[in-house]
Image 1 (cartoon, rainbow, N blue to C red):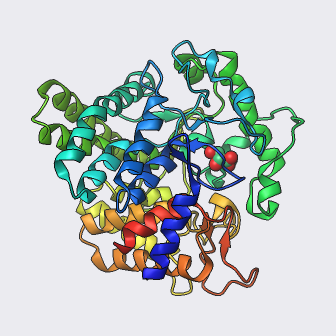
Image 2: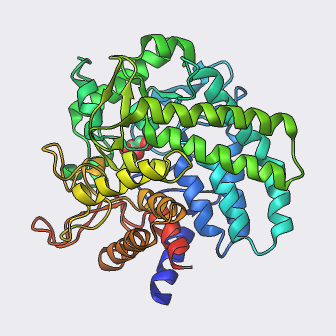
Image 3: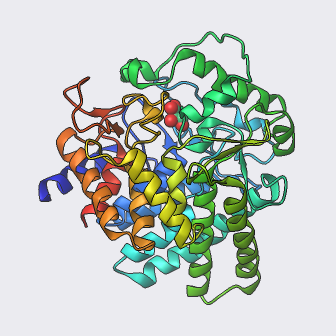
Length: 434
Ligand code: DGY
Protein backbone atom coordinates (compact mmCIF):
# COMPACT_ATOMS: atom_id res chain seq x y z
CA UNK A 1 0.00 0.00 0.00
CA UNK A 2 3.09 2.26 0.14
CA UNK A 3 3.18 1.87 -3.62
CA UNK A 4 -0.49 2.72 -3.99
CA UNK A 5 -0.02 5.76 -1.77
CA UNK A 6 2.89 6.98 -3.89
CA UNK A 7 0.82 6.55 -7.04
CA UNK A 8 -2.08 8.47 -5.52
CA UNK A 9 0.19 11.37 -4.63
CA UNK A 10 1.58 11.38 -8.15
CA UNK A 11 -1.94 11.65 -9.61
CA UNK A 12 -2.70 14.66 -7.41
CA UNK A 13 0.65 16.33 -8.02
CA UNK A 14 0.37 15.89 -11.79
CA UNK A 15 -3.12 17.40 -11.82
CA UNK A 16 -2.14 20.44 -9.75
CA UNK A 17 -1.95 23.60 -11.89
CA UNK A 18 0.08 26.79 -11.68
CA UNK A 19 -3.05 28.83 -10.99
CA UNK A 20 -3.41 27.23 -7.55
CA UNK A 21 -6.06 24.63 -8.30
CA UNK A 22 -6.26 20.98 -9.32
CA UNK A 23 -8.03 19.65 -12.39
CA UNK A 24 -10.17 16.54 -11.81
CA UNK A 25 -8.76 14.75 -14.87
CA UNK A 26 -6.56 15.75 -17.81
CA UNK A 27 -8.48 16.51 -21.02
CA UNK A 28 -11.93 15.50 -19.74
CA UNK A 29 -12.17 18.08 -16.92
CA UNK A 30 -9.59 20.85 -17.45
CA UNK A 31 -10.83 23.44 -14.87
CA UNK A 32 -11.62 23.63 -11.15
CA UNK A 33 -14.80 21.90 -10.00
CA UNK A 34 -16.41 22.88 -6.72
CA UNK A 35 -16.96 19.64 -4.83
CA UNK A 36 -13.94 18.03 -6.44
CA UNK A 37 -11.76 20.78 -5.00
CA UNK A 38 -13.03 20.03 -1.49
CA UNK A 39 -12.15 16.33 -1.71
CA UNK A 40 -8.86 17.12 -3.42
CA UNK A 41 -7.87 19.46 -0.57
CA UNK A 42 -8.48 16.62 1.85
CA UNK A 43 -5.99 14.40 0.02
CA UNK A 44 -3.33 17.11 -0.13
CA UNK A 45 -3.83 17.85 3.57
CA UNK A 46 -2.05 14.57 4.38
CA UNK A 47 1.24 15.54 2.77
CA UNK A 48 1.20 19.07 1.31
CA UNK A 49 -0.76 21.43 3.53
CA UNK A 50 0.11 24.48 1.43
CA UNK A 51 -1.58 22.96 -1.63
CA UNK A 52 -4.60 21.89 0.43
CA UNK A 53 -5.10 25.45 1.62
CA UNK A 54 -4.47 26.91 -1.81
CA UNK A 55 -7.10 24.66 -3.38
CA UNK A 56 -9.77 25.86 -0.95
CA UNK A 57 -8.65 29.47 -1.11
CA UNK A 58 -8.79 29.52 -4.91
CA UNK A 59 -12.34 28.20 -5.15
CA UNK A 60 -13.53 30.52 -2.37
CA UNK A 61 -11.96 33.47 -4.23
CA UNK A 62 -14.41 32.77 -7.03
CA UNK A 63 -17.39 33.21 -4.69
CA UNK A 64 -20.02 35.68 -5.93
CA UNK A 65 -21.19 38.77 -4.09
CA UNK A 66 -24.36 36.97 -2.98
CA UNK A 67 -22.49 34.05 -1.37
CA UNK A 68 -22.97 31.67 -4.29
CA UNK A 69 -20.03 29.37 -5.19
CA UNK A 70 -20.05 28.13 -8.79
CA UNK A 71 -19.70 24.52 -9.92
CA UNK A 72 -16.90 25.15 -12.43
CA UNK A 73 -14.38 27.99 -12.37
CA UNK A 74 -12.87 28.47 -15.83
CA UNK A 75 -9.37 29.49 -14.79
CA UNK A 76 -7.86 28.88 -18.21
CA UNK A 77 -8.74 28.96 -21.89
CA UNK A 78 -9.12 25.53 -23.45
CA UNK A 79 -11.43 24.01 -26.00
CA UNK A 80 -11.18 20.43 -24.74
CA UNK A 81 -14.38 20.87 -22.68
CA UNK A 82 -17.97 21.60 -23.64
CA UNK A 83 -19.96 23.58 -22.56
CA UNK A 84 -17.34 26.19 -21.68
CA UNK A 85 -17.54 29.72 -20.31
CA UNK A 86 -19.00 31.22 -23.51
CA UNK A 87 -22.01 28.96 -23.19
CA UNK A 88 -22.52 29.51 -19.45
CA UNK A 89 -22.02 33.31 -19.44
CA UNK A 90 -21.96 33.72 -15.66
CA UNK A 91 -21.46 37.47 -16.12
CA UNK A 92 -25.20 37.72 -16.81
CA UNK A 93 -25.74 37.58 -13.04
CA UNK A 94 -25.21 41.04 -11.47
CA UNK A 95 -23.37 39.60 -8.45
CA UNK A 96 -21.13 37.18 -10.36
CA UNK A 97 -17.35 37.32 -9.91
CA UNK A 98 -15.77 39.80 -12.27
CA UNK A 99 -12.42 38.10 -11.98
CA UNK A 100 -13.35 34.45 -12.43
CA UNK A 101 -15.59 33.30 -15.31
CA UNK A 102 -17.65 30.35 -14.14
CA UNK A 103 -20.86 28.44 -14.59
CA UNK A 104 -24.07 29.87 -13.15
CA UNK A 105 -24.87 26.71 -11.25
CA UNK A 106 -23.42 25.20 -8.11
CA UNK A 107 -22.54 21.79 -6.62
CA UNK A 108 -23.03 20.13 -3.20
CA UNK A 109 -21.87 22.34 -0.28
CA UNK A 110 -18.90 20.38 1.02
CA UNK A 111 -16.66 23.08 2.45
CA UNK A 112 -17.97 23.10 6.02
CA UNK A 113 -17.05 19.48 6.62
CA UNK A 114 -13.95 19.75 4.47
CA UNK A 115 -12.60 22.51 6.73
CA UNK A 116 -13.26 20.32 9.75
CA UNK A 117 -11.42 17.39 8.16
CA UNK A 118 -8.50 19.67 7.30
CA UNK A 119 -8.36 20.51 10.99
CA UNK A 120 -8.53 16.80 11.92
CA UNK A 121 -5.65 15.95 9.60
CA UNK A 122 -3.45 18.97 10.33
CA UNK A 123 -0.36 18.44 12.46
CA UNK A 124 -0.05 22.15 13.19
CA UNK A 125 -3.53 22.78 14.61
CA UNK A 126 -2.96 26.46 15.34
CA UNK A 127 -1.84 27.14 11.82
CA UNK A 128 -4.88 25.37 10.37
CA UNK A 129 -7.20 27.12 12.78
CA UNK A 130 -5.85 30.47 11.58
CA UNK A 131 -6.58 29.39 8.02
CA UNK A 132 -10.10 28.34 8.99
CA UNK A 133 -10.70 31.61 10.77
CA UNK A 134 -9.79 33.49 7.62
CA UNK A 135 -12.24 31.59 5.43
CA UNK A 136 -15.07 30.29 7.57
CA UNK A 137 -17.36 33.30 7.05
CA UNK A 138 -17.31 32.71 3.30
CA UNK A 139 -18.64 29.20 3.86
CA UNK A 140 -21.25 30.51 6.28
CA UNK A 141 -22.31 33.13 3.68
CA UNK A 142 -22.61 30.36 1.15
CA UNK A 143 -24.99 28.46 3.45
CA UNK A 144 -27.05 31.59 4.01
CA UNK A 145 -27.22 32.09 0.25
CA UNK A 146 -28.85 28.66 0.03
CA UNK A 147 -31.32 29.23 2.84
CA UNK A 148 -32.30 32.70 1.66
CA UNK A 149 -32.63 31.98 -2.05
CA UNK A 150 -33.25 28.30 -2.55
CA UNK A 151 -35.43 27.21 0.36
CA UNK A 152 -38.59 28.49 -1.31
CA UNK A 153 -41.05 26.92 1.15
CA UNK A 154 -38.93 27.77 4.20
CA UNK A 155 -38.79 24.10 5.15
CA UNK A 156 -35.02 23.79 5.44
CA UNK A 157 -34.67 22.02 2.08
CA UNK A 158 -32.88 23.82 -0.72
CA UNK A 159 -33.52 23.20 -4.40
CA UNK A 160 -31.19 22.39 -7.24
CA UNK A 161 -32.23 23.54 -10.71
CA UNK A 162 -29.88 21.46 -12.82
CA UNK A 163 -28.76 17.83 -12.80
CA UNK A 164 -25.14 19.05 -12.80
CA UNK A 165 -25.81 20.75 -9.46
CA UNK A 166 -26.60 17.37 -7.89
CA UNK A 167 -23.15 15.95 -8.61
CA UNK A 168 -24.88 12.79 -9.86
CA UNK A 169 -25.06 14.17 -13.37
CA UNK A 170 -26.96 11.58 -15.42
CA UNK A 171 -28.67 9.59 -12.67
CA UNK A 172 -31.73 7.60 -13.82
CA UNK A 173 -33.67 9.68 -11.27
CA UNK A 174 -33.69 12.51 -13.83
CA UNK A 175 -35.28 10.35 -16.53
CA UNK A 176 -38.70 11.18 -15.05
CA UNK A 177 -37.97 14.88 -15.43
CA UNK A 178 -36.68 14.53 -18.99
CA UNK A 179 -40.07 12.97 -19.84
CA UNK A 180 -41.76 16.26 -18.88
CA UNK A 181 -39.50 18.27 -21.23
CA UNK A 182 -39.05 18.51 -24.97
CA UNK A 183 -35.95 20.62 -25.59
CA UNK A 184 -34.79 21.62 -29.06
CA UNK A 185 -32.08 19.58 -30.80
CA UNK A 186 -28.88 21.54 -30.15
CA UNK A 187 -26.02 21.54 -32.63
CA UNK A 188 -22.70 21.28 -30.81
CA UNK A 189 -19.54 19.28 -30.69
CA UNK A 190 -19.21 16.89 -27.77
CA UNK A 191 -15.75 16.94 -26.18
CA UNK A 192 -16.18 14.42 -23.39
CA UNK A 193 -16.61 11.54 -25.83
CA UNK A 194 -13.27 12.32 -27.45
CA UNK A 195 -11.67 11.48 -24.07
CA UNK A 196 -13.95 8.68 -22.85
CA UNK A 197 -15.88 5.80 -24.49
CA UNK A 198 -19.40 7.09 -25.31
CA UNK A 199 -20.91 3.99 -23.66
CA UNK A 200 -19.70 5.41 -20.34
CA UNK A 201 -21.07 8.95 -20.86
CA UNK A 202 -24.52 10.62 -21.15
CA UNK A 203 -26.31 10.56 -24.53
CA UNK A 204 -26.62 13.48 -26.98
CA UNK A 205 -30.34 13.76 -26.18
CA UNK A 206 -29.54 14.04 -22.47
CA UNK A 207 -27.14 16.88 -23.26
CA UNK A 208 -29.94 18.71 -25.12
CA UNK A 209 -31.85 18.74 -21.83
CA UNK A 210 -28.80 19.92 -19.86
CA UNK A 211 -28.18 22.81 -22.27
CA UNK A 212 -31.83 23.81 -22.45
CA UNK A 213 -32.10 24.24 -18.67
CA UNK A 214 -29.04 26.50 -18.78
CA UNK A 215 -30.60 28.53 -21.58
CA UNK A 216 -33.71 29.09 -19.48
CA UNK A 217 -31.63 30.18 -16.48
CA UNK A 218 -29.65 32.53 -18.72
CA UNK A 219 -32.83 34.06 -20.09
CA UNK A 220 -33.45 35.23 -16.50
CA UNK A 221 -29.81 36.19 -15.88
CA UNK A 222 -29.46 33.34 -13.38
CA UNK A 223 -31.90 34.99 -11.01
CA UNK A 224 -32.81 32.47 -8.29
CA UNK A 225 -36.45 33.55 -7.96
CA UNK A 226 -37.05 33.40 -11.69
CA UNK A 227 -35.32 30.03 -11.88
CA UNK A 228 -37.57 28.71 -9.10
CA UNK A 229 -40.53 29.86 -11.15
CA UNK A 230 -39.46 28.78 -14.63
CA UNK A 231 -36.88 26.00 -14.53
CA UNK A 232 -38.33 22.68 -15.75
CA UNK A 233 -35.88 21.00 -13.37
CA UNK A 234 -36.44 21.88 -9.70
CA UNK A 235 -35.55 19.21 -7.18
CA UNK A 236 -34.81 18.76 -3.48
CA UNK A 237 -31.91 16.32 -3.50
CA UNK A 238 -31.04 14.15 -0.46
CA UNK A 239 -27.29 14.22 -1.10
CA UNK A 240 -27.15 17.97 -1.65
CA UNK A 241 -29.21 18.75 1.46
CA UNK A 242 -27.23 16.25 3.52
CA UNK A 243 -23.98 17.97 2.55
CA UNK A 244 -25.48 21.27 3.68
CA UNK A 245 -26.54 19.76 7.01
CA UNK A 246 -23.24 18.01 7.63
CA UNK A 247 -21.41 21.22 6.74
CA UNK A 248 -23.68 23.22 9.08
CA UNK A 249 -22.72 20.89 11.92
CA UNK A 250 -19.03 21.33 11.13
CA UNK A 251 -19.37 25.11 10.97
CA UNK A 252 -21.04 25.19 14.39
CA UNK A 253 -18.21 23.14 15.92
CA UNK A 254 -15.52 25.21 14.18
CA UNK A 255 -17.04 28.54 15.23
CA UNK A 256 -17.07 27.24 18.79
CA UNK A 257 -13.46 26.18 18.50
CA UNK A 258 -12.66 29.71 17.33
CA UNK A 259 -14.17 31.15 20.47
CA UNK A 260 -17.80 31.28 19.46
CA UNK A 261 -19.93 33.68 17.52
CA UNK A 262 -23.31 33.48 19.25
CA UNK A 263 -25.33 35.08 16.48
CA UNK A 264 -23.97 32.86 13.77
CA UNK A 265 -24.14 29.59 15.70
CA UNK A 266 -27.68 30.32 16.86
CA UNK A 267 -28.76 30.94 13.29
CA UNK A 268 -27.03 27.80 12.08
CA UNK A 269 -28.68 25.73 14.83
CA UNK A 270 -32.08 27.05 13.87
CA UNK A 271 -31.53 26.20 10.18
CA UNK A 272 -30.08 22.85 11.13
CA UNK A 273 -33.18 21.80 13.08
CA UNK A 274 -35.44 22.87 10.23
CA UNK A 275 -33.35 21.03 7.63
CA UNK A 276 -33.17 17.81 9.61
CA UNK A 277 -36.91 17.74 10.09
CA UNK A 278 -37.43 18.62 6.40
CA UNK A 279 -35.29 15.68 5.34
CA UNK A 280 -37.17 13.25 7.55
CA UNK A 281 -40.69 14.41 6.77
CA UNK A 282 -40.39 15.13 3.06
CA UNK A 283 -37.54 13.07 1.65
CA UNK A 284 -37.80 9.78 3.54
CA UNK A 285 -39.76 7.09 1.70
CA UNK A 286 -41.15 4.51 4.15
CA UNK A 287 -41.95 1.90 1.49
CA UNK A 288 -38.47 1.99 -0.01
CA UNK A 289 -36.68 2.42 3.32
CA UNK A 290 -34.47 5.20 1.98
CA UNK A 291 -34.26 8.93 1.32
CA UNK A 292 -35.40 9.96 -2.16
CA UNK A 293 -35.54 13.07 -4.32
CA UNK A 294 -38.52 15.41 -4.33
CA UNK A 295 -39.61 16.93 -7.63
CA UNK A 296 -40.86 20.44 -6.82
CA UNK A 297 -42.18 20.92 -10.36
CA UNK A 298 -44.44 17.88 -10.26
CA UNK A 299 -45.02 18.10 -6.50
CA UNK A 300 -44.04 14.51 -5.73
CA UNK A 301 -41.25 12.22 -4.60
CA UNK A 302 -39.19 10.46 -7.27
CA UNK A 303 -39.36 6.93 -5.86
CA UNK A 304 -35.97 5.50 -6.80
CA UNK A 305 -33.01 4.43 -4.71
CA UNK A 306 -29.56 5.62 -5.65
CA UNK A 307 -26.35 6.02 -3.65
CA UNK A 308 -27.47 9.55 -2.69
CA UNK A 309 -30.35 7.87 -0.83
CA UNK A 310 -27.92 6.52 1.76
CA UNK A 311 -25.72 9.60 2.17
CA UNK A 312 -27.88 11.07 4.98
CA UNK A 313 -25.99 8.53 7.10
CA UNK A 314 -23.17 11.05 6.84
CA UNK A 315 -25.09 13.46 9.10
CA UNK A 316 -27.32 13.51 12.14
CA UNK A 317 -30.43 13.29 9.93
CA UNK A 318 -31.40 9.63 10.46
CA UNK A 319 -32.14 8.46 14.01
CA UNK A 320 -31.10 4.93 15.01
CA UNK A 321 -34.26 3.40 13.50
CA UNK A 322 -33.89 5.14 10.15
CA UNK A 323 -30.17 4.38 10.07
CA UNK A 324 -30.99 0.70 10.52
CA UNK A 325 -33.55 0.91 7.69
CA UNK A 326 -30.97 2.51 5.39
CA UNK A 327 -28.42 -0.17 6.16
CA UNK A 328 -30.83 -3.01 5.45
CA UNK A 329 -32.01 -1.40 2.21
CA UNK A 330 -28.40 -0.97 1.13
CA UNK A 331 -27.50 -4.56 1.97
CA UNK A 332 -30.62 -6.02 0.38
CA UNK A 333 -30.42 -4.25 -2.97
CA UNK A 334 -26.82 -3.07 -3.39
CA UNK A 335 -24.82 -5.37 -1.14
CA UNK A 336 -24.89 -8.86 -2.73
CA UNK A 337 -21.67 -10.84 -2.41
CA UNK A 338 -21.17 -10.55 -6.16
CA UNK A 339 -20.98 -6.76 -5.84
CA UNK A 340 -18.68 -4.05 -4.65
CA UNK A 341 -20.35 -1.34 -2.59
CA UNK A 342 -21.81 1.04 -3.37
CA UNK A 343 -23.41 1.16 -6.83
CA UNK A 344 -24.66 4.63 -7.73
CA UNK A 345 -28.09 3.31 -8.71
CA UNK A 346 -30.33 0.45 -7.58
CA UNK A 347 -28.84 -2.68 -9.21
CA UNK A 348 -32.24 -4.42 -9.02
CA UNK A 349 -33.89 -1.72 -11.14
CA UNK A 350 -34.26 -1.88 -14.93
CA UNK A 351 -32.62 1.55 -15.30
CA UNK A 352 -29.38 0.26 -13.75
CA UNK A 353 -26.43 0.44 -16.15
CA UNK A 354 -23.13 -0.86 -14.70
CA UNK A 355 -20.88 1.17 -17.03
CA UNK A 356 -22.59 4.49 -17.54
CA UNK A 357 -21.37 7.31 -15.30
CA UNK A 358 -23.97 7.85 -12.52
CA UNK A 359 -26.40 5.15 -13.71
CA UNK A 360 -24.74 2.32 -11.79
CA UNK A 361 -20.95 2.53 -11.30
CA UNK A 362 -19.28 2.93 -7.89
CA UNK A 363 -17.85 6.38 -7.03
CA UNK A 364 -15.07 6.80 -4.47
CA UNK A 365 -16.35 10.12 -3.07
CA UNK A 366 -19.76 8.65 -2.26
CA UNK A 367 -18.07 5.63 -0.73
CA UNK A 368 -15.95 7.93 1.41
CA UNK A 369 -19.06 9.73 2.71
CA UNK A 370 -20.84 6.44 3.36
CA UNK A 371 -17.78 5.15 5.19
CA UNK A 372 -17.74 8.21 7.46
CA UNK A 373 -21.48 8.00 8.01
CA UNK A 374 -21.57 4.29 8.79
CA UNK A 375 -18.74 4.71 11.27
CA UNK A 376 -20.48 7.64 12.96
CA UNK A 377 -23.66 5.59 13.32
CA UNK A 378 -21.78 2.59 14.71
CA UNK A 379 -21.82 0.29 11.67
CA UNK A 380 -18.12 -0.43 11.78
CA UNK A 381 -18.14 -3.69 9.87
CA UNK A 382 -20.08 -2.32 6.91
CA UNK A 383 -17.93 0.82 7.01
CA UNK A 384 -14.83 -1.38 6.69
CA UNK A 385 -16.35 -3.27 3.80
CA UNK A 386 -16.95 -0.02 1.90
CA UNK A 387 -13.44 1.18 2.60
CA UNK A 388 -11.89 -2.13 1.54
CA UNK A 389 -14.03 -2.30 -1.60
CA UNK A 390 -12.84 1.19 -2.53
CA UNK A 391 -9.17 0.33 -2.03
CA UNK A 392 -9.59 -2.97 -3.89
CA UNK A 393 -11.23 -1.30 -6.91
CA UNK A 394 -8.45 1.24 -7.23
CA UNK A 395 -5.71 -1.34 -6.66
CA UNK A 396 -7.09 -3.63 -9.36
CA UNK A 397 -8.02 -1.04 -11.97
CA UNK A 398 -6.20 2.23 -11.36
CA UNK A 399 -7.26 5.73 -10.33
CA UNK A 400 -10.37 5.92 -12.46
CA UNK A 401 -13.37 8.20 -12.15
CA UNK A 402 -15.86 5.35 -11.54
CA UNK A 403 -15.90 1.58 -11.34
CA UNK A 404 -18.05 -1.38 -12.24
CA UNK A 405 -19.87 -2.68 -9.16
CA UNK A 406 -19.91 -6.26 -10.48
CA UNK A 407 -17.11 -8.44 -9.15
CA UNK A 408 -17.36 -10.60 -12.29
CA UNK A 409 -17.42 -8.08 -15.11
CA UNK A 410 -18.36 -9.73 -18.41
CA UNK A 411 -18.13 -6.49 -20.42
CA UNK A 412 -14.59 -5.31 -19.91
CA UNK A 413 -11.20 -6.42 -18.70
CA UNK A 414 -10.68 -3.23 -16.75
CA UNK A 415 -13.52 -2.25 -14.45
CA UNK A 416 -12.38 1.36 -14.16
CA UNK A 417 -14.32 3.79 -16.33
CA UNK A 418 -14.49 7.49 -17.26
CA UNK A 419 -11.51 9.75 -16.67
CA UNK A 420 -8.17 8.17 -15.74
CA UNK A 421 -5.82 9.60 -13.08
CA UNK A 422 -8.88 11.12 -11.45
CA UNK A 423 -8.06 13.51 -8.63
CA UNK A 424 -10.69 12.80 -5.98
CA UNK A 425 -10.21 9.04 -6.38
CA UNK A 426 -6.54 9.61 -5.52
CA UNK A 427 -7.23 12.17 -2.78
CA UNK A 428 -9.77 10.05 -0.92
CA UNK A 429 -7.70 6.91 -1.32
CA UNK A 430 -4.94 8.75 0.52
CA UNK A 431 -7.39 9.54 3.31
CA UNK A 432 -8.56 5.90 3.39
CA UNK A 433 -5.00 4.60 3.58
CA UNK A 434 -3.65 7.01 6.20
C1 DGY B 1 -19.44 16.92 -16.98
O1 DGY B 1 -19.07 17.61 -17.92
O2 DGY B 1 -19.94 15.80 -17.11
C2 DGY B 1 -19.24 17.44 -15.62
O3 DGY B 1 -19.20 16.45 -14.69
C3 DGY B 1 -20.30 18.42 -15.26
O4 DGY B 1 -20.07 18.82 -13.96
